[in-house]
Length: 436
Image (cartoon, rainbow, N blue to C red; front, side, top):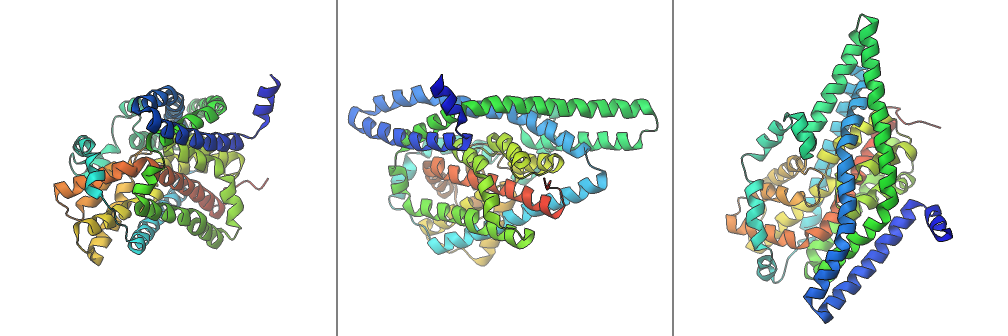
């Protein structure tokens, strides 16, 4: 009992970091033992550990749709339309700016590193079987049209399927409609009905966050299992085989996190950016381990409220929207594989091709969906803008699949950091941060 009491007194972030470090060590040991005792030993060990990590990701996914739904309704209904319109334009403008910046920055980094891959054919061959299944879903119709049409899907079907964009659109429209009815109501009964409705929405949101508290208590266990399984399955040889590609993506993301975002905050907000970045360590670590922007959303919302002191009506909107459409890590990641394709197949990327690629990356990132490995589907669109043959595209996708588990961790951490930084910047400029 004393041990448990001591454990619960340790701040959650340190418990999670400890679980991550122990998970890395355990995973590498399991991987090495698999080499000694055979693949069956490794597979059985991973099968035992895997459910403990999967249940964490599933719990976060379970709660994220109710959080998005209730948070966006409350956020949209809490502000006058004029104020909400300004906030919406500011948030969307910020996300577009950072995505475009990240895509250009990622292209520059990729050109600077000029990544190559030895034994590419052999590495791609191990993943070729998976590419055919992915290509069916990724190339079904015009992706830009699909994203636009997907905004207006049946909201109840979208809720059941965990489809974020239609939920976001319906929740915002519902909240705005409630606000219009409340402001224009001429009789007391209508105003009371809408006020009660919004009070119930707020009560549901608070109840959902209590469930998040319970999930957080389990978090270190899931972190340990997820990390151990990742390193047990792939080991450090994954990084060694793809050294140039991995170094390029990771360097670009770390520079974005530690240099570019802080510079943006310092220039725009006139504050020291590093204390702000330190406050975001928990959602960034959550994103890193779970590889899901959506799974990190509950932690981001709690951090924005408790640490950054951002008003709920802003944080509910910006973070819920950002988990779906703001993917700065994706925008850095994808150009690296475009440059790799140019090196592998012996053609030069012209300025026109790079411009088209950057635009494709920005718009493709909107459809990433906030789920683990979502960027792989978007790579089809980016490679299509380079007019690669189907065989060439399949080769690059297969290579991306080979290292995606590692790169996806860094990419998602960058995505979530971008959501939170954007929330802070817009909050600071619109005076929507509590000073107490």
